[in-house]
Image (cartoon, rainbow over all chains, first blue to last red; front, top):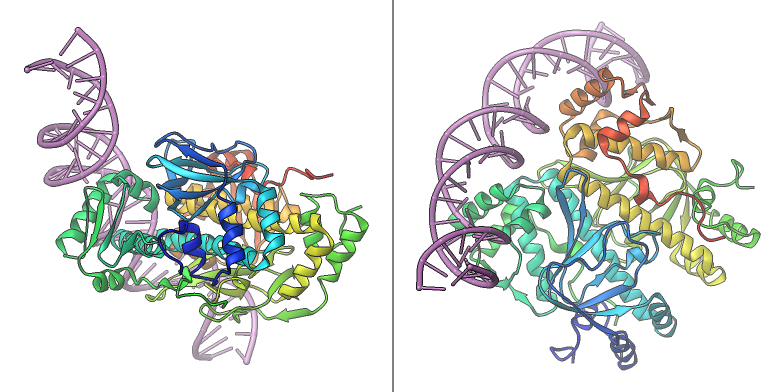
Amino acid sequence: MISAEHSPLTRKLSAFVALSEVELAVLERLHQRRRSFIAGRDMVHQGQSAQAAYILSSGWVCSYKLQADGTRQIVDFQVPGDFLGLRSVLLRTSDHSFEPIVDIEASEVLASDLLDAFARTPRLATAILWAASRDEAMVVEHLVGIGRRDADARMAHFLLELGSRLSLVGLGSREGFDCPLTQYHLADTLGLSAVHVNRVLRQLRESGLVTFRDGRVTFHDYGGLVNLAEFDPAYLDQTGPLLK
Amino acid sequence: MISAEHSPLTRKLSAFVALSEVELAVLERLHQRRRSFIAGRDMVHQGQSAQAAYILSSGWVCSYKLQADGTRQIVDFQVPGDFLGLRSVLLRTSDHSFEPIVDIEASEVLASDLLDAFARTPRLATAILWAASRDEAMVVEHLVGIGRRDADARMAHFLLELGSRLSLVGLGSREGFDCPLTQYHLADTLGLSAVHVNRVLRQLRESGLVTFRDGRVTFHDYGGLVNLAEFDPAYLDQTGPLLK
DNA sequence: CGGAGAGTTGAACCGCGTCAACCCACGTGG
DNA sequence: CCACGTGGGTTGACGCGGTTCAACTCTCCG
């Protein structure tokens, strides 16, 4: 019943709640106001004041913070089905920037649309808050990775997490997934230098674990990678619908 | 009008919205069900299933994740006025543990209490969501620090952030603040070894910037510290009430 | 008086950053 | 058509920031 003809967000939320026809309809109605953005041009700059949020329907985006010395730290990636900028609706200024990594399609969602949808369908509200909580849990896991894992495990963990997230919306599997990121993106995500990212990738490739090449991540030894990363996907909370 | 006789949470939220008498009353009513916890014994273990949330009224708590190899990463501290475990109300399992650093007093808040309060006073709901967004922004800033700042700047930034947070509830100033943390807490927070934390603290002390000793943090050169850390408190969003 | 927790310091080591080449594929303009 | 620049990737040499191991101190507490 939930399949490829639904939006990625619908597919994702279905991992948490089984949505009724009415809820599906309300959800689809959030996807009016379609927008396109082109790769590389920031959608939102840090310091800018509050914006609408978006639901990403195709393409990849990263959210990052820039520092005075020019280095940047990527906080998270958004893939199809993810919300973007939900938090900055409440804080007075957006505390980070969003950059489309490829050309993207997104639906603009006003705070009022969201509140309206929440009022009609409380279970949908719960599902969306679940998605927000999950995003936060990913940031926390990311923090743990940078603080307490070495470069190899960090990379392995990151690729496994991305794979799981993409699988949830039908864009990945245990075989691998298409991935438009450069090694510079990986470096800014993992708190490494681009040079070291290259070395780590070589090492993972030569160990027969995973290949990152030509826009494609291929898992050669999924179990071995899980082992190296000590990857426990519990924090992604995507074991299947809990609410019936 | 908002002064020491109010709860720390009230003081904190007042930095965001000017609360009416009715709203103050609803807020105080959330502080029924008082609980005490003793230092060092976990309140919530990671992997445990969903719990109530708490409002911390006195003492300090840290939330952390433990890894298989025994290292731990502290994700955040909670000081008086902070919520604790709001997120784990929605995810199926708590994704981290909470440990009281000293003996604490907290009010247990059930999801139903919160929803009830939200329904009565929408502006209070906004204020609480503001607090949650702010907590998330702190985790993000923490991530940036670990990923892209060196040990000195990381330490300086952390101490400045704590100082600002405590000032908001009347427990700190530009002079300094009382601080029950050990150097091991700092190490697990900043992704450093305890040995290196000690060296960094010595260096900051010998530069005349800040002293961490005997449960007290003393700022000797606030401006110099801000400079070293490139500390920009915008993400704390505590410049004073926006909603009148 | 003994033990545990916290802090302090030195010496040796190493993971990762930095610098510097060099490669290839692509696009653009003369 | 080639000339050139630009962005991504690859590799080696070298050094620094931070870890690890180990020893020692002080204080608190039973």
